Amino acid sequence: MTLAIISHTEHYTANDGTLVGWSPTVNEINHLLEIFDSIVHIAMLNETVPPLSTMAYKSNRITFISIPAIGGHTLFDKLVVLWYIPKIIKTVSKVLKEVDRFQLRTPTGIGVFLIPYLTLFSKRNGWYKYAGNWNQKHPPLGYRLQRFILKHQSRKVTINGSWPDQPSHCLSFENPCLTDEDLATGLKVSQKKSMSGPLTLCFVGRLEAEKGVGCILDALQLLSDSELKRIAKVHFVGAGSALNDFKLQAAKINIPIHFHGALSRHKVFEIYSESHSILLPTTASEGFPKVLAEAMAFGCIPIVSSISSIGQYIKHQEQGFLLNQVDANTLVMQLRTLFNLDQDIYTRMLSLQEVIVQRFTFAHYHYQLKTQVLTEDKIH
Image: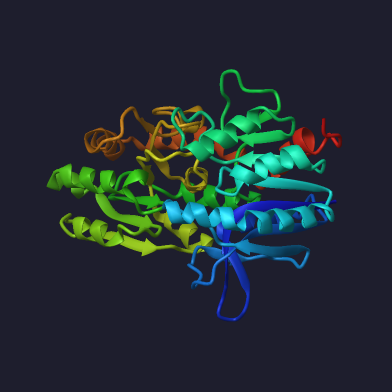
């Protein structure tokens, strides 16, 4: 069985000529070879230097077909998309004739025209993966349009979380990010962690205010000197245009704060391994960030916004700490709770995380696909 995946995932050409793409998506596709004979990935190719957060495909059973790297926030960026619509549709149409199924990853700029095209003009079996906040109250117009069409067509849609009045063809799925080996390694790491000494904190994601980076730094500035002594260091992993501003703010805080930029998956897991907590006071449109599942697998207690489906997996004072409002003072309150967390309570929280983390394994994802998505051959 051959699968076509259509996405906006950024790809690059490394110095040695190797094709690389954004690690979370490429890693997921690599593992999909366990249930598909071959995969064709239609996605965007950039001409810039690849960041460290990329990886190569592991098999020649995966074929990459490029489409122009388009999209953006300006009016000009959106007009450029219009110019390339015929070319992208032609590419997609040609590939669909050669495969058994497709997956379109949404929401994305190209989804605005590809969802209607696939709905109206293609009989190929397939499904949609909606990775954003399915229950977002005021999404951008493009996201709102895509969600509306997905609700009112017949193909299956995998979404984050479970919601009232969820259409029957919209299936609650977790985004896979962990192997069984990752879980075994993470368990060994977790069992060695202690809450008695200074704690290491981490943030993994885009370095921008919407993701909560400024909120974290503001909260650290509100801590007393004695409270700061409870922190060994803080890691920020990720890239963003506001990096220099965040570095200037961090320089005023009397604890080691490291900005690593984008890192490989292996290096990010090393950060999780030495950290006791992951901080994500986000106000961005999230589904369920994979970084939370990854960090919990390595014994990190999440302190996170209760946004989208996050609160369906992480219960306050059970698997982690939820912020009832996103601001520095609220984050400070939860940091103080973390600083005073008893080792036995920490161990109990890790045990409660185990069931949740299992649901973000590739094995569980493949089981869901085989039993809920790949069972019907007829489009109606």
